[in-house]
Image 1 (spheres, rainbow, N blue to C red):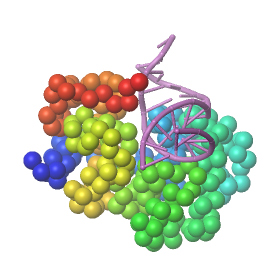
Image 2: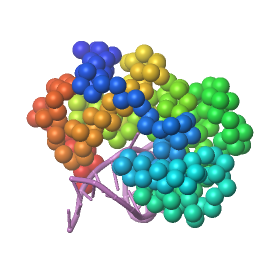
Image 3: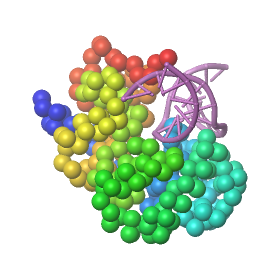
Image 4: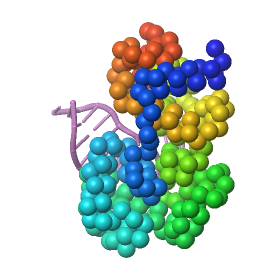
Length: 226
DNA sequence: TGCCAGGCCGGGT
DNA sequence: ACCCGGCATGGC
């Protein structure tokens, strides 16, 4: 089967199983950006606690984040882990937004996707996945998000080479799917749902995965095994 | 009780 | 261009 058909087949099976995910779980574009940074190598349940703290204190805005002391910010986002690093990253994010678009996200949205991505990548704390998450889920741009689940699921199903880079995996999807933000949005959300339930690190749960995405036989690949 | 979670950075080859 | 240690909490 061609790669495009494989990817659409996967998508349809996942969608049929899980239904629409309604991503990203946030109440504003800025909250998406905050969540994208806080969830770096961190369980979302921990991010929720951190965001709840910020909301409770009325600090979930660009202006408030820019005004608050890094020290205090770190204390509030403590549950999300790496809190000292992430506090700096949130500060860098709002500093970038202020300088780049006067903190106006509607204006930010008007720029070309590739240009925006390059600019976001210059910000300390924003790497490929975070940049794509922001582009897709905060700004509605058709930028496919590749995360650990995406890589693991694709590798276990032998859809990509073992040492595929972020860029290669992203290309695999974008070259074989309609370049549509709605599809990219739903697809990544479905992959995360699949990963959380059936494709965890060092756990060969694939065989009990009810989705039967593609053949997943005896040659199980374990990722990131130390 | 150790392993894992929706990465990224900086310094080293 | 890779490779690796560091960053840290909370759930199972």
